[in-house]
Length: 215
Image (cartoon, rainbow, N blue to C red; front, side, top):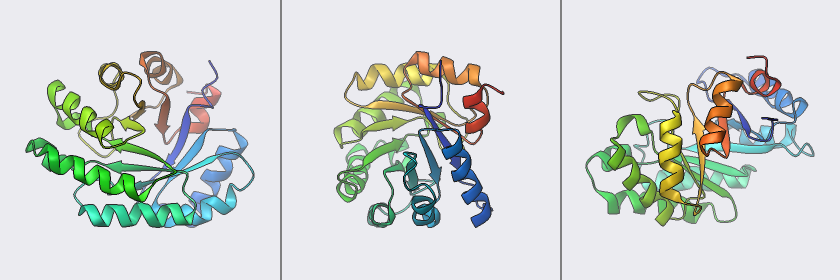
């Protein structure tokens, strides 16, 4: 299986420099990966570095805690789109979901959906915090609010992606949205297992080596 079309080569470290991000983007272009996922401050530069390559520019909103005000998340996403982001991965309001304030969770997602019309919106559920029942409910709420994808993890939470999470999310969304697996995906074998389980995208900081099968 050619993994390059699934991989979002991800660099969201706080200490990533301009040179680091440029190198990251050029690696993705050289490996013909699906996309890069970079912090909002670098979206405009990534757009320039990747112009004409076909590599998608992905960024984040409310990352990594999901605790920003909805208006702040929406504005962050709106600016990212203006800067050239093709896709935005927002973190759901984790604390509100744990409190079962589902209407508030839905409003939070809708605010970002409204700010990203015409772009792909992924909702990061941070599944490591939730029981299976709450993962199901969170995914339903995300899809109901207009998410194009539900995503497992930030990579900064209690754990990363699992095959079981992907199977669960795939079954819940049932074709109404797609699934992105991220967090702790360091080998090609694991990526293939996640794709077989139903993941349409793989987020990994090890994207080039993983797509080449070096790991």
